[in-house]
Image 1 (cartoon, helix red, strand yellow):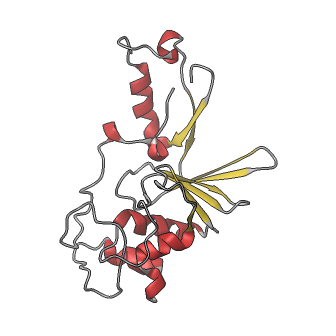
Image 2 (cartoon, helix red, strand yellow):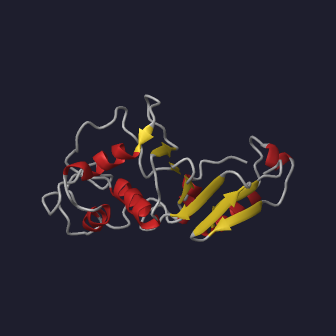
Length: 207
């Protein structure tokens, strides 16, 4: 921002960033502290399309995502690439089969891809895979257990976010270990961050 960059974020994140960047930073002043400027924002409500006339980036608001209410997905439709943070953090090696339980974050990501009708071949996670592999859409589907059953992504998500759901219900589900404990049940909102800790589109950003 000190160099004139515009911050693109969901509209609910703007007040938090304004407050943080208005505070003094005296222990280890960065460029913005040394050259204070009023931040420029371009906020997103549900969708924003950016283009230079050749390349297109579509920013979409993730719905029903327990980790952060103001998270955005960045899709490059021409390249069929999706950039996301915290919704699918790849394990060190690609899953060979479906584990016993499914992550609600993985389910939410797939449900949003389905809702937005995105044509995705490759996923670029902000927390990239340790082996530096390319993460393809089939890997996410394996983490959902969708490769081995007939349930739709939307149905898997609906069941997973139900407080009465257990891994013995309906579809065979898969994914990373749940952040809410080992009971197979979700406590809605239990992993939701407070506004003071929310991160933009994952908010892995610097001044």
